[in-house]
Image (cartoon, rainbow, N blue to C red; front, top):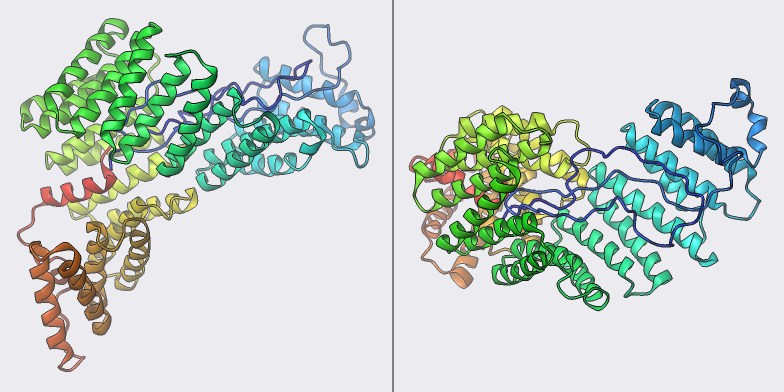
Length: 606
């Protein structure tokens, strides 16, 4: 499966913008901060960019003296006087103070104090039995301030309270408040890496929006696209394809031909098709998107699409066409952005990968070095995430060069750049897993196990514990446990990996068969010979009936089964065969390079 850069991978929380509008906004419209991806890089692994949760725009009561300029803080005794919270004009006034505090740069802590008191005031002034939209709005603002402070758990708690305030049946204003709350809550869960909960919130928000506006409103298309991006982030490509098709259909009806909206939708659809291995369909969507961008004079976006087209040609082994697409994009980026822009470096990385695959190792290494020089001295405006992603991609090429130490250094640099960045959980877990592979290859098994454990912890928390990638990581962590003689833990990991891969890939998939073999070897090392025999008999039956016996693994497994059956006929106390030989009978002849290729195919490449 090709690597992905999910369109919602955050590059850090965007600056907090809190506004208390004087007039109600158009109901059920997605937040304006939800920007579309303009340059997805299909070869980088994992997550998309959830924007910083922003408060909903619902109606606010008029604040006193609204026409005046910057408001002075009220006397301290009034702020401390709880009885003043019963004043119905105080809530809007305090929210305006919170907004002005943020705008003046005084910091979010003071704004948090104002927002907390505003929420209390709205709550105390609410009419019993009547839901207060002002309270819901103040809670959205409060949650946004918590997010700006990095206190996401507290923001979640506030938003869970906020979504219970509106009653959708009361009309469009209530529907807007409920929709905004669910979408903001989904963004906050995404920043915590809780993708499953994030998607559930987006689905609920979409349901409310569709009930209020109908299925074919252009604003529904924006939310469908946003949900599709979330599904891509979670590697749920079938669900993402359904949402993206809905978006395309709506835009086809409401947008002019060759619109920018349709182009963006087709780029996302191409990303989904590529992830599913449907390269021809991906190419078709990219060509149509490119035509739309050309018609709108978007030269840089055309170049970005050319990079994606090059990636598809590379996957189809149409190398000459891939080189042409990459060089075309490179010319545009150099002329419009300069020779040292990260966009130029990203094309260098793609060319390095291509030349490695075609056996031109000198050219491949040269392009890697050129890209690293750009990342070493980035131009102003280059984000740390761009540099980190580029280094992670280059490390995959050094891994193919059989230089795991150099690859490991680049991954460690990338990790430092990603540290403390909200919403980067999927990207970090992918890098951690690849670091585990590199440590394993160089024999640093304790560090390998630690990296895999960190990756597994992140993946469990993010809702990816049922993905095929998670099963592969569990399997490799089990191998690290074997090297550390943690046999019981290895068995548990192999068993969990087997369950996941059987569900996601099927019993005949090569990844699943590898887990079967490792689990059988581990059972034998634990003295559970009958269990090991049962697994190997099942594997041989699968190969004979469905996969054929030409695979060299068939003979190895047949010999191992014969040895186990022979041992089972003797005393069970007889010393078991070496666990290392049982797991990999050809370990003495297999090279590190082959191991690297095996695991790269499972998704550890950038």
